[in-house]
Image 1 (tube, one colour):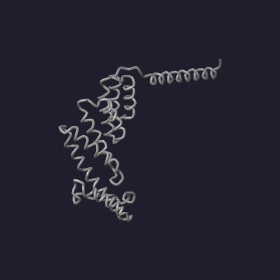
Image 2: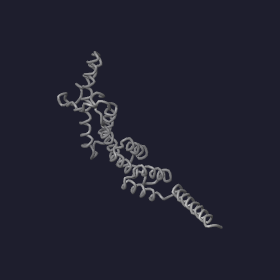
Image 3: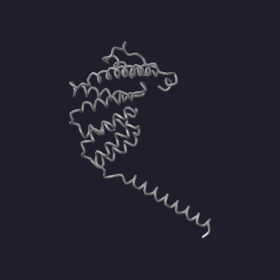
Image 4: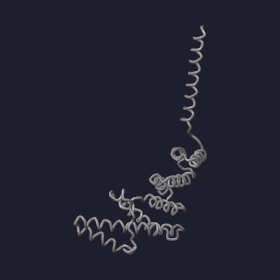
Length: 219
């Protein structure tokens, strides 16, 4: 066999071995399953600590699918919800909080979970003249929270959010009154004016929000 032929054979063998090793490595990664609940939990926490939130979502799904009755699930849902709140991913945070409420509605700290849900909605409020439904839904959740958990330690925080949202709602209603007046729709304007008048926030306390010029044309 010539030197050139031997080199070609050696290159082919090395290439085949490399492909085999990569294939084995991929299979091992893809075959990560049937692990203890604590394994998935620790992996999820480590991924969150190092900033790999998307990967932590996948790890949580493995924990949930392999250990549906694990006591670690409740804690994992809380951790994932808080991680997504920190990342300002409020819809994903609400996913975990809603799942927690469905599965553990009778848990001792359910008031904390409902507080986190209100907080996530409050923090996701960005555009004062567009998020009317979000404001109304969150205020309704706050009213329900205050009725169900009057002794909760989170009542003062929820009350603060309620005050700010009520002022935002009042400002929005006043904007709508002005809009209907400009459109020459007096009945609609009167309807929203009555809402402003009935609000617990005094009209004089409703401070118009300073909207940047580049956003005001869309509000």
